[in-house]
Image (cartoon, rainbow, N blue to C red; front, side):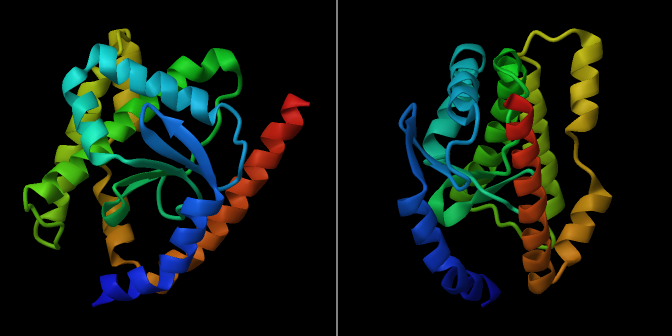
Amino acid sequence: MANIFRRILFWPYEQWLLHRRAAGEVDGIALIDYPRNTPYLRETFVTALKFLEQRDPRRFKRVKKHVKRIMNFPLGYSGAGYVQHLKAYATSFRPPKSEASIPKAAVLEAGMLAHEATHGLLHERGIPYTTRTRERVEKLCWAEEHRVYDHAGLTPESLAKLKSIRKFDPEYYRKRWSASFFQRIRDGVQHSKQEEERRKQYQTQKT
């Protein structure tokens, strides 16, 4: 019932976002950019998908099947998520500091794309995201993200550092799972303000 309520509540916003913030396609995947003209957004995902295609074809196929949209907009609760009914990879994208930083950012996004596409795969296979299963589901998705990083050609030290930054945090997830619907909305508004401020600071640095 709660999911139906959320769908009804956010349907007008989703439709507005899909039609008014469309920014073309990346390798056949629709690109949605809420802030508009986010620096290096397209370039980063072009590089991320090319990385997956060349280094990890298996997970590239999974992303292509289960991710039909890449949506850059404030999420409020995390850096990325999967919107099942839209088959969308939703992200609070933070632009690389420079063009030279795109490959590094692309590896991170490639891992996150595989993570969220795995949510789509598990849903397709009838594995529910419930109180009983959600921790196991998240651990599996995080493991798939880490397998992408194994293909990045990083030094053992750099790979270990990346995996230590991008890892399953039980305390964080339990806090997120216990938050009320309205707490998430409040967090989303706060996060949106923070992202807008970061975007302004980034643009100021570039001028």
